[in-house]
Length: 320
Image: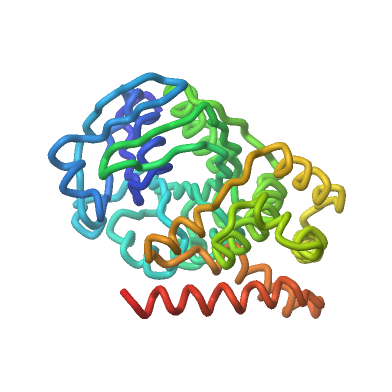
């Protein structure tokens, strides 16, 4: 794929902007971005990134749109880096940008993210990603990036597309990340990594959002906080295992050791709540809850946290 590669970035928050920057360093890539709240700033001034790994850069995508329904032709790759709060609506908005030759790249938290895209576009390839990149949008179009930078990518296999074609599309996307000089790995068991991260997110996102405490303050709030957190993680692992993902219960100890090595931190869900924005309830909590019910699993802590988080999220949405 030495000719021009047309890429659409949908969702120009901190993570979307960071990977827009990475792809902007690829001469082969023609970049279009779909921005909402920061549209005016990006249209006028481009994107400014201050990165501990890559330095300071200001760059301008080739096209800045408010909505992907304004595009005139499909894209080779569509990177979905938006908050996963309404996947079905997004698949509808992207319709003018998608053809059978389009590969959809999902860079989001959660599990089950791929299913609405597979349903809407059954003949497209899907690359699913788990990112551990620390970035914040400090002002519209302005991104602060820490040293944290890593991503795992892999195929969400499609029986309707020849396996060799899918692999070629994955390898071609990987070559763009390599050219953009970011850290990543191609994994065959990408769903395991998705579920490992959702075990982490299913605990810390809702617990920090519901209590408005950082992680260490929550864990030291009572003698019950630590065992409840561990039970919540274990229940999510139970669901993942029932879905065929080879998760180990030792993951709970690993994640608790990791959180205890860090100072008290918040979460994206807590930040969204504080700023009056809808939260990513469904892909972090809702999908595991539905799968637990489907398989007849008892997940009382997960069910309770999910119900409380949905109530808070409903209040936020009602105020918009």
